[in-house]
Image (cartoon, rainbow, N blue to C red; front, top):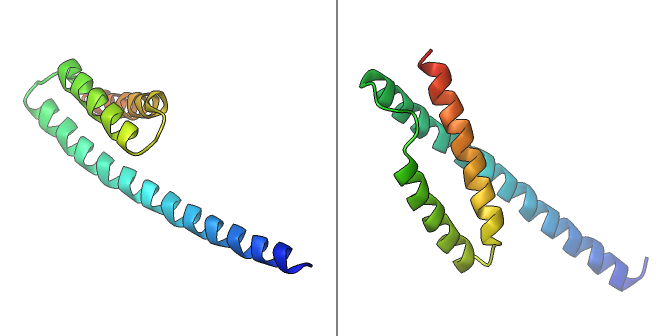
Length: 98
């Protein structure tokens, strides 16, 4: 291997290590988020509140779009991601109210 190839392999390994750490952060962060949304779901169920809050969801989408722009992330991807997370939260709320 040339020195350039060795250095490229080292840089690749560093990037992969960073990706692995970030994946772990994402998973643990989502887990923590879902703990809070489950608590919200239980509170809503206990007080006969609807599982969905369209006004809050719109605010969150606008907020996430702004965050995505500031983070140099495609806002459409961020909105799709949040929409998926919201769908999962609502699904969990509905399941726990049955």
